Length: 277
Length: 125
Image (cartoon, rainbow over all chains, first blue to last red; front, side, top):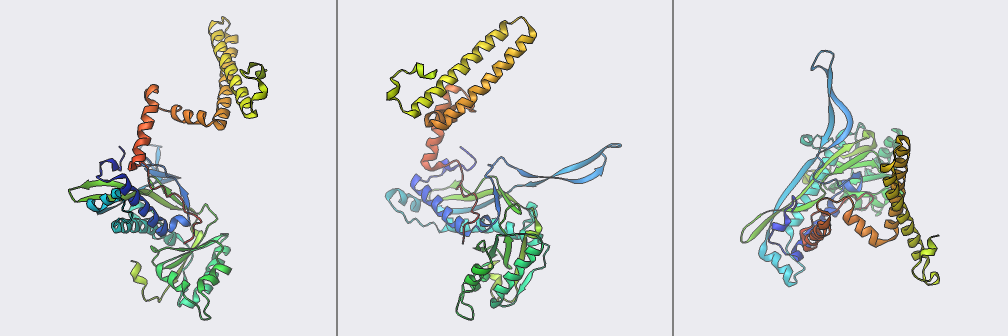
């Protein structure tokens, strides 16, 4: 048995498959950062940290003419989101049901995907993770109306170019920004197509964890790295006569290797901006 | 010539089987050489010559492993057994049983590993 302890759950093989398949579907839809950044792993539960190759706290001591320094490592963060499922419902899979009620799986997958992406875009202080937005040295490009998106993306691309960051470029979009871009422009032509055709040679990625608008970043590689120990998994926690408690988990850390490779496009007046929080 | 040691008429054998035969004969020759060098080195009374013989024996081990790797790449059966036994731990006679037990657990949905998402870079939407 491994750390997930799945063997202990009163769940049939058929039900496990539906749970895993549903989680995988939702995670692939919601995970935005993984569509944009370099990926290292999975390295397994045993990986506890990532070596940065750097030193911290270079000081004198502890003895005369003896200095010391502390190796800088990035510890992996373990995410864990519990959810409950009804055993009676899960047992229906063995009787041929292919439409189990897996809303709790969907919700957990959304939560964990949101947490991973939030760390990638906004950082996670407790986990010593600096996000893409907070690390960028470029002043944000302000987007005051939905019609300004093409101009803003063009300006952002120029900022990256001038900083020596070449493409291809991708645009990660928060929910509101994405909705604005799929809407029609003044001439009835969707803004999204205008941006895809002329400005972004990578891709437009729906990123519900992104809170402040959109981020333009380079996809050339070597700028952002997601390191995963245990990749997204579902484990068993406990059960009683009617319900089983499972959890979705992973271990990861994220590093920005080239801060200049991304820029925030900040939407200032979108009325529904807070809904992603 | 490895062709002299065919057990069946050469015209009945495919090129694939002939190449496999060449590799197996070569592997046998390398293993024989390792065995002989080992014995000669142990019996040798001259220290310098012994060092040369041990060096040669180690070279033959390298040659043998190169041929074994060729066999692994060209024979799925070799590959499967190499994966099972090489770099394993525990009693060698139980390695296969333990591996089968693990894969059995996985096929029952206990999947030791993750949802196996990995990188999605380049995937749109």
